Amino acid sequence: MQKNNHEIKYAGFWIRFIASFLDTIFLALPVGIFIYFLSGGEWFDFAQYQQNIQMAMAANPHAMDHQPQTSFTWELIFEISVLVVTVIFWDKWRGATPGKKFVHIKVVDAKTFNDIDNKQAITRSLGYIPSTLIFCIGFLMVGFKKNKRALHDLLANTAVIYEEEN
Image (cartoon, helix red, strand yellow):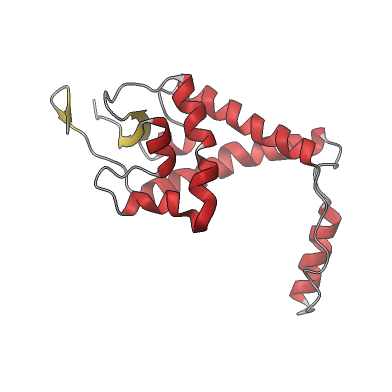
């Protein structure tokens, strides 16, 4: 595949995994911390998490008997916030989030290789839900397809490619 006399190189599973991990650290974690404090600690019961960890470290077989309570409202606010921040980065950095920018990959339209629009960005983000279902097979597809597209890429008509060197 070529674009403007440059060979298109699709980003594979592991480089995308690294970008996703970096986005979790630099994008989702700060948003999560902000939302947790904004909720006044109502988002989830952190004390129950701590108790479960202590019990698990003590090899207590009842460590997972009581799961922390979470607030659906605050979880929804978190998920929408991450979606909005992601779309803002894709718009500002032409298809890249901080993790993708760091590893020099970006999301583009699968046919034209041009920047994605907001509809594609939102569809792709929401496409993570079905990609996660059934043992994350939607993500694992990247390792088996020639064009390295995941289920959420197919749904949004996007592809993840390496940035062209200038």
